[in-house]
Amino acid sequence: LASTITAIVGQRVARKICPHCKKAYSPVPTIVDDIKKVLGKLWVPSTQLFKGADCSECANTGYLGRVGIFEVLPISEKVGRLVLERAPTSEIEAEAVAEGMITMKQDGYLKVVEGVTTIEEILRVAQE
Image (cartoon, rainbow, N blue to C red; front, side, top):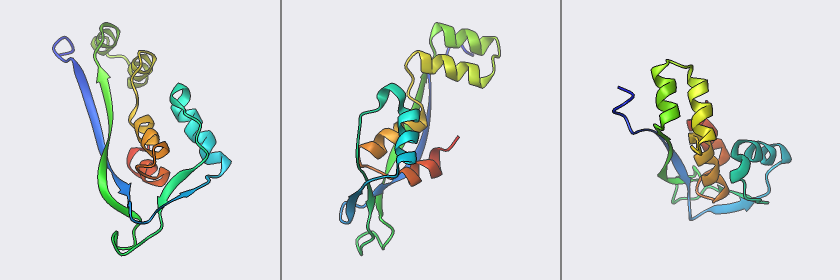
């Protein structure tokens, strides 16, 4: 099976921040530290995040619409070999990340930094 698979895709759906009541805020340092840790070399310094302030457009939820967060695992020669050897999932993931795979949580955090969704929403749908 490993020789026929070229990639594996995982996805979750997260709620988007309502554009009608979206407002910026300065996150506490522990949240910024968590984002830096998860994103690693993907981190782009950001001093503010966004959230919905609740309005009639979003039924006072702060969210309107959905966005996908994804994880794509390309099956390289090394990853394929690990699958064939029945290596632990953690070892396969470590190799994939070393080869440049962006995890689902990282993709979600990138969408947080871009102002598409909230950190709370990503933690709700993509927590490992």
